[in-house]
Amino acid sequence: MDVSVQILNSLNYILVLILVAMGLAIIFGLMRVINMAHGEFFLLGAYTVVMTDQAGLGFWPGLVLAPMIVGLIGMAIEYICIRHLYQRFLDTILATWGLSIAIKQLIIILFGPAGLMIKPPLPQMVSFMGIEYPSYRLFIMAVALITIVLTFYVFLKTDFGLGARAVIDNRDMAAVLGINTRKMYRTTFTFGSALAGLAGAVMAPLMSCDPQMGLGFFIPAFLAILTGGTGALAGVLVGGGAVGGADSIISFIYSPVISQIVVFSMVIIVIRIRPQGLLGSRNRG
Amino acid sequence: MVHVIRLLVLLIFAVLPLSGSDYLTVQLTQYMVYGIFAMSLSLLWGYAGILCFGHAIFFGIGAYVMALITKGMVPGFTGFLASTWIGLLLAVLSVACFAVILGYFLFYGRLSGPYLGIVTLAISVIAERVAVNWYYIGGFNGLTEVPALSFFGSEIREIHSLFYFILAVALGLYLFCDRLMRSPLGTTMAAIRDNEIRAEFFGYNSANYKIVIFCIGASVAALAGALFATVTEFVSPTLLGFGFSTEVLIWVALGGKEVLLASFLGAVVVRILEAFLSDILTYYWIMVLGLFFVVCVMFFPRGIFGSLLSERKQKTGRAL
Image 1 (tube, each protein chain N blue to C red):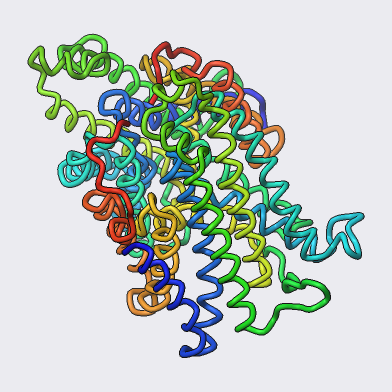
Image 2: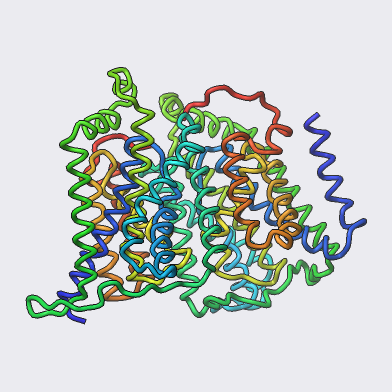
């Protein structure tokens, strides 16, 4: 395989990883909730696409539906369960973990434990700068990049983003100043879930969809947040770049198992030296 | 009152094999090993406030070391060096060393709460993948025909004697852990759990204390793993992995993490229910268990048996 193709593939993985990690980081930053079911939201996104594909509608309606459906599921989970646990930080992890087990099992019951493939939506290759590259991967990169830029725009340039950053900085002060934190939590959780759903949907045609794929993205995404730090949203970019880049390059040269071990050891060393993460400046958990 | 319940539990376990079938005895022997494993997690999570999501790594490593040593698969370990004694000893020692090294990085890295949980979760996922890809230790299929426990030339194979042996070990470990938590170390652990910053102002190096308790909890888990390998005569990568880590966490949370005996009972009762209900509910069992776990976290944070067996009054407003 050509080296430039491999670099593009790494970039592809990094961008999707950032998409997943960003949802996780926003939910954590604002609500101090670590959403253990985030990997399962990714899974739900992927299986939404599988469902539309099986129903004969093809990939594209699934791509549009996935963020909406997963966002709605996220909103429902926030309303039914997480809302009651805001004062009990550790319990939210356990509760979302219980949910993740239930969701994963539900997928197994509905679709079976085996991997499912869907028809490639953009099978043609594009050639530029002397290399051939699948056009669908370019499409993924474009979608991920646009979503990331939009998220940054919302958080850094709009009134909602201003309020959200105020809540991240000092939750009580923000509430005193008249920001409806409850409403903000719900919006955030819905938005974060939708991001995971979108990431799952765009990745579905590239990999075989099986019920364990959520975990495969949740752990690197979480390691990315640990590496980058949770204070600033930009930390996700750095962490996602470092973890995703190292992971895909080492697994290309050696094997996926070795790359997991190496990346994980790197993360442990980073947090031993800089407990707040590469870009973080605030205390953690 | 609590003492009466404890004795009653012991009595029930002691007479169960007399009345029940052989099948029940064999199953209960296994469940008691799970119970020991659950107690070790309760030690870390309920007593020391260390939420370990990948606790199965220690159980699994203990099981693998025991299997490799007693099967004579470690080069240079033959004769007495391949006996049950050395197997148990090395299983516990290797895991204790591993836990100290890991603990050094984790606790001096100031990881706590969910961060710690997910880092240990990641380790357990990686450990499972390594075991699956390492063909010398059996790869995906694991190792079979692990020799039974054997002390002073006699093997413990008969199901009733094995049952009472495991019961005695469980009782001994329970008394050890219980005593440990009443010692000054246990009090300090409780102080660190309830308010780490305050404990540090009193001059306790919380990271060192956490490493100590992490090491003890891991060693007990390793012992449980080593026993499991001999009881079932089989080890496989799933013993190290994510799924099993999840299971033990659910047992402890359902039973009651703040009480050792409650965690033990949580493991045994959930396993018994699973044996009955997974036939009826099949695939739905795990989903039901997951949702029940959520409900339990929301409404019974102290577990099902926890409130019943606790000596302490319900605390109000514990610090995060």
